[in-house]
Image (cartoon, rainbow over all chains, first blue to last red; front, side, top):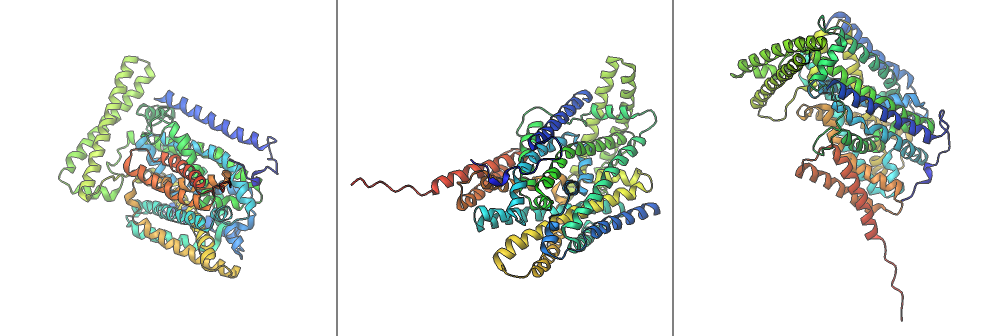
Length: 45
Length: 565
């Protein structure tokens, strides 16, 4: 298994410095949403 | 509809596509027509990608889904942000830097012409069916409001859509989507405010939420792992990720959107914007559906929301009895809902438990009566699997929304259907021209010729969509039907792109045969097992990868035996 050369990061994102940090922020947002929805489900059922 | 509704509706339907056509004017080359000359900013791409999914189906079927089944459908979208992160780091830079028009063109660069052709055909079959469903959805609106036959309305919508798409190309589609998404967001907020304001005196927003939750309509997250359960956290995260990877990474209608970006970074931002906004938006739409359910606790809902079905059932001799049971169950549920609401405020636990039991029991009764009504209809039509989920929200809108808002909601649904369908038609034309026509039939024609052919293919696919739409009414909930069709075809596309991106040793022959084995595996799952359809995405993609590697190993030339003499 090998990564293609086209995947190299050549431009930085406008925020958070690196694309890896942006990706982590998106995944943390998802985790937060799931947690909130889970608590929502528990509370109202 | 009132005069004000008509004015709002016609103005919106004319204004939104006109804005898109104006912003996207001047498509004189194939590159401009299919890729907008690679000039789009991230926010336009992000909103356009969202708008393609937020079609008329989203409004009509998702709200109805919440009414019938609660909010658990939101879990279906949990895999989407995961997929967006993966794709923004992989597919976006790879496709962008390869300079391709379509995703399948890359497969020829990486594998061979037949793998590209097979992937293109799989896409054309899948998307060709889905676009038919997208065109059918708003026909429901017209059939409920005006009583026009579905066939007539699908034909009208299809023709308007084809004219608009043929003229504007992808730039017009994208800019139309931007405006449309702004109106959709406004429409959703307005819809929620309206439904809450229509609750009876004494029922606050908090009460409404409580009453929805008490009968499981707010069951957004289910942690229990069950492969036979369509929607739970695990099927959403794992199956949903694979489905979203297949949809956004391998479906030309989406790939084409981020190929229009000014740069790799702009395209990546467009996808990640979608990753953050999509799940809350779906939650919100489902919540509106749950509130519609609460509204109908206090206002009698029809037993069958589809007026045509209701009329057919009313001729049955058993109908009066079933209808009487339904009305009695509704009356009992209404009283139980008021009693429960009162009980929860006095904090008397035994009384609360009794009221809750009564409320849930009444809900079970009304569900049973409604099921009997549906069975009566199925019996009269000699068909199984009928449901009227797609009619619920529009019945509510047309009967209870104030003047002006009805016109706006219907206009949003119409433009959403046209916009998402036009994007799909544009991508179908792109694949038909670039991957089939130019590659296999006419390789050296002028740019003007391909532009002309692209427009003809757009019109041809529009005609096909209208024909297929005639059968969409038999596919149950439209939103589920779209996703089920996708789960039959996306996995093999996803599998072959995983092989293309990450397994450099795998060559064309192995990839081609692995795709066929993968599709056979999905068909076998559907016919021989009870596995929920979201898991087909995982199974199909893994089968393609495993068999691709296996075929690759078997087809590698063996080293010549050493001469020992």
